[in-house]
Length: 285
Image (cartoon, rainbow, N blue to C red; front, top):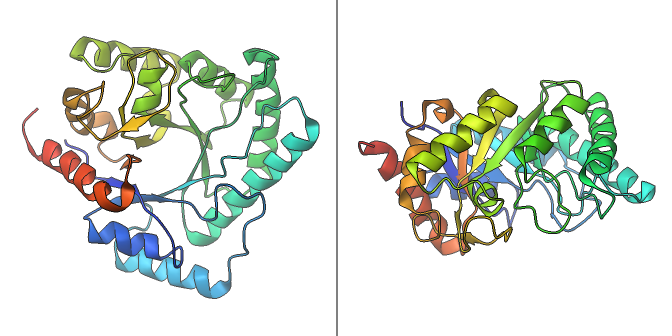
């Protein structure tokens, strides 16, 4: 079966519920939002009125259970600096509580960068923080570790690192994965060909299991495979190309997984990229 939950990361200027309206306007069946500014440590409190309005509109528009949150870009659970780790843990825990209040089941996080101490040391620190975040947050929200492009010392560019993080957290089912197509391509997983697509997901299946994937970021790449450069491009117009996204929306493993675009010029081009995914899903592979 083709993918059913397709959408984009929608802007929320004017109120978080506006992201729902904007998603509906371009035909999204799933959306991603920031519940607060991704560049601030302490968000504005959610009022009961905001929560009620968001939940009511999500139900009216058919988005209940189909919304993904993305946490702050400031979070680094793998930092050697204990103060930064504490701030990051507090911020991420707060985000999961916000998601629970809003009825958002998944929160995506980049987890962090090891800063030169090495990936194993960074993963050990991150795992300790993740365990606390999950222990101190509501059970109805799942934390999703996002695959990364591997720029600098950022963790989780390799599937082995995500597998190790899950292992260190004790296999907690509330730790899932958000798979970003641009990021894995930039990290060296060449999904642009059928052979590469199959081998990439076979490796993911072996190390992690695709049942851990609870959200997908569908982004083409401005740069070649393995360059470790995180630069998104419009679908079918970058180095990944159209074929991989056709495969993605026809992959039965992702039929009921939210697939959202984070492509450039969101205000004007998200509608086009979302429409491409729906069109490819409707056509024979």
